[in-house]
Length: 132
Ligand code: TYD
Image (cartoon, rainbow, N blue to C red; front, side, top):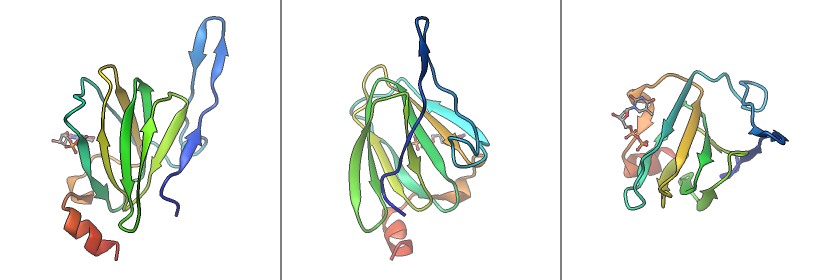
């Protein structure tokens, strides 16, 4: 499973502006059970710092920009989310940290399941242990 998996969304644009459609099991590789979005973020207050045991997500920065560090316990890479036409797949057991939010950043996340705190791994040492 590669660490960085981008999904390119088709931009449907005309003289009135642009539109992107996200559909479960079509351009999003799972049934979408939850959508949440982060906004009003601070550049010096990073978020995330966890991995999920079973949840799969797609993160899309629909306005502004931010960085996301992805870590599978063996390698790490930071990429920039800066386009409403690009989604980043956040797969199971991928530790992620979002940072460097622009003032206008709106980070939308599509998730394969409802919120469940017991699916989170919030301790990095635990995460490393489970990805050995
Ligand atoms: P948290 O996991 O700390 O956010 P981030 O991963 O961006 O750092 O979540 C912040 C709070 O929001 C926490 O109390 C859990 C709650 N929450 C929900 O109630 N539902 C959700 O879908 C999510 C993602 C978080």
